[in-house]
Length: 292
Image: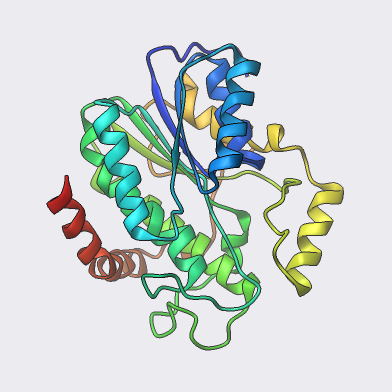
């Protein structure tokens, strides 16, 4: 990618202490952007922040500590961002998670559904006014080719039955694409674009806490997968390239627009999922509105 100057641009990256997220934050800092990292672990976050500042010679690397699987912390993180930054030009929803066995968050949601899907839905909603004040602005959702294995079952959204890590991962990444396409349609003409991407098979620590078959897939990716730096290239392309200015509601792989799964274009499912998600998140959005 040709050198791009991002000075004066505020870019937020979730899940940025390792892997693709860290490589993305580093790449943006090297381009001169003001980078806001949202990380779950303070010690790792501070170490990564210091490392990126030193490597990029860019002091404008901020850190917000929040576990995005907990919606009270999503609200707090969004509030910190809006209080510190009147503008936000790029929002990168990169953070994700998965468990070997079904776990429920403090809010009562299945962990992966909350972390991979509902959390970025809520965070983006809470930051929309700031994004609108910063147009042209870009929202980038880090999805996965794993979405092709997903299917939305409205009778089993929380995976109470037949929990399988690989299936849940595919379901949540498909849900993320439905969200991308619906939000893109709603924001048409506002100056905000919304796109999603598959970063490729990347060697990261994403699967370190998993067991069984999904752990084996992760181990295979670590053997043959590309580096986090290469995995971050499509994210950085969508975040910075003039070539995609105005491109909205698309799915990318290897920095090229590509079709997502046939299921992902089902408008009826997309709109129903949006409505259900709004209902699930309504208490948290209302609480946030009362606080800010």
